[in-house]
Image 1 (cartoon, helix red, strand yellow):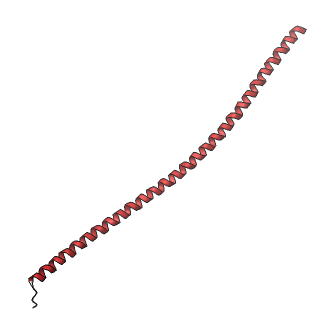
Image 2 (tube, rainbow, N blue to C red):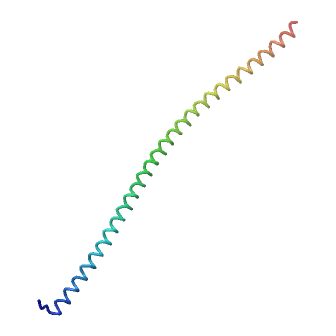
Image 3 (tube, rainbow, N blue to C red):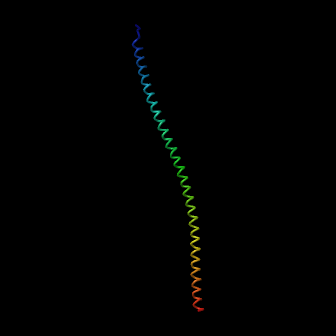
Length: 107
């Protein structure tokens, strides 16, 4: 049998309790760190996905602008055709009226 002083046993028990407490705190800290790492990873994934969505939206916007420009060109072309047809219509109406009047005069 070994004789150990009571104060040494008391100190050893305190050290053991402190060690156990530190171990439990380390486990909590490790779990917290893992959880935070997972949250950061999820946030990074969300940010990456949002960046891809932004790129796609920019491409769609550029494509829509191209379509609008093409439609504007078509509209201006059809306006010119409309003006030309309108001018031709009035020329034919005027020419027809002149021919009608001339035919009445000379008959």
